[in-house]
Image (cartoon, rainbow, N blue to C red; front, side):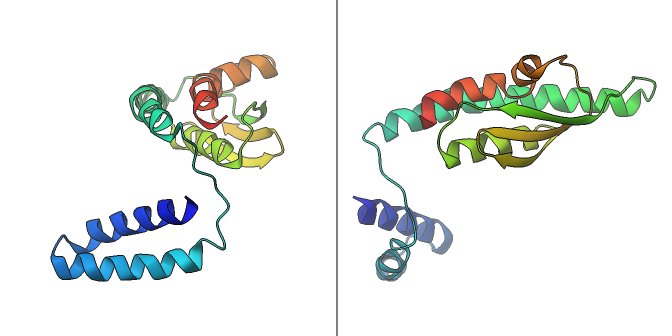
Length: 160
């Protein structure tokens, strides 16, 4: 199953980059097959039977929430730039995550980083270190809720 999934991903990427002619498809199949044999030794992933359900949840639940948070964060940072008298309380906060897999933690860290005003610095075990331009929470739970709460709730259902 891992061979098939790797081949399909490589082949689809090749077709999108090269084109859909018969010769390109044949060459893409050959290149994808060779790369599959080489790469499958180095990758360690499992294809879950629930992958289509998780993919739909990621696209139709997570992405709208991410885009909404992205818009709100952009407006907040723009407001702070245009109104320099707004007080800032920058700092680094430590956020505990309940996500188990490395890919889920990476997705969470990237989602936090892509929203303006926050920057994921490091992931150590089950903790993310995030630089924030304005720390609003008074304790670890409030910081988690404000920074990663909505992301982690959805990602937990996708990556667990």
